[in-house]
Length: 433
Image 1 (tube, helix red, strand yellow):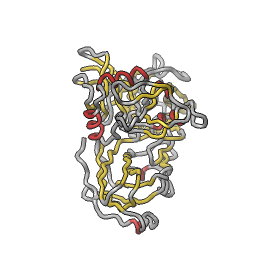
Image 2 (cartoon, helix red, strand yellow; image 1 turned 120 degrees about the vertical axis):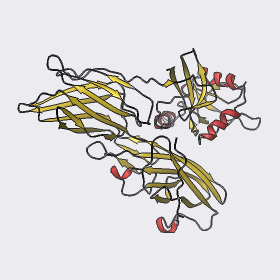
Image 3 (cartoon, helix red, strand yellow; image 1 turned 90 degrees about the vertical axis):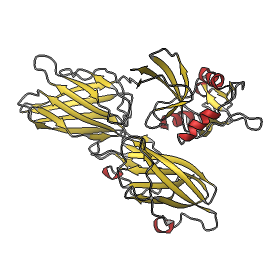
Image 4 (cartoon, helix red, strand yellow; image 1 turned 180 degrees about the vertical axis):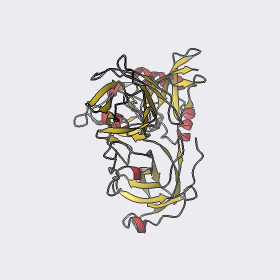
């Protein structure tokens, strides 16, 4: 992990947003630092402050590591967004609203990566600091195809379905298809390294098109998982004359995410297939409960042997005022919140089961101080632990029940008119290598 990048030059809100400061309200000088979770953030970096309504209240562009951000804002709650590499995408006409969309270019891919980070801050004093962690919001892909017949004059690969856009809160939307052309170098056809927003569906379709004097022949394959942000995919293939042509793929990790591997055949004339991307989640030792693994907080470790274990990660972000799915008029709120949640580009988080909620209570015996300290060190929102004067309740069991962070607190049915808190979890399997 990089050391924090100091960012400078005082920001005068009157210059960039004349309505940002209300002179009748107390103001705060907010200093912002950014750091890249992996890799090196590129400059310039755009830092934006949105109020609770999602309206722009301040912004500043950082040109180098020597600059510092200092935003003058009214006291209150804000979401801070940091962007890098957005100029290689289709930018919105303005960033006035948090709903502003950065779109993938018309070709379906960009030529350099997009990084983004976000942090929520509540300003209540004359000065404050916030640290924004920036992560890659794109996957990268490069293709190499060998032994292509000599009469082939053009090679391209289509990738679908990928997300089309990302807003200032980091939520993806829409869908698009990338069409990447390859060029010939000696006997090998290769593509440039391209950057795509992650997959919008449950699978990814790759279509390899070969053109010769007789026309175009396409070979397609359906990969049974979406391409993931922060993962570089290197697909190396060989055309075999005597049998169906095939492509094998290997993901090469360059300081982005955990290693995966892809192996599949590209059947002649095939309209599809099935395949898997298998996470290895290799570790040198089984993580301990109340520890940090790859920037995520480990809450529980179960089914552990000397070489593997199931690890339950506890989300860093807390969602408030969430209704249970049974609440009339709010049937989709919880599921919408789950789908929009990602953490350091790790997605597919879930609501804790009742069994997991009970295990958390048993593991920590009502004392969550150490766990909260780890969450705080990762710039997360601390848990609201049960006290005699505060009984903060969290949704579990697909939103049908609620629990609190206490040793002996009851697990009860969720009401249909009450707002709850939501803290997501993710279960992964790790293997010692």
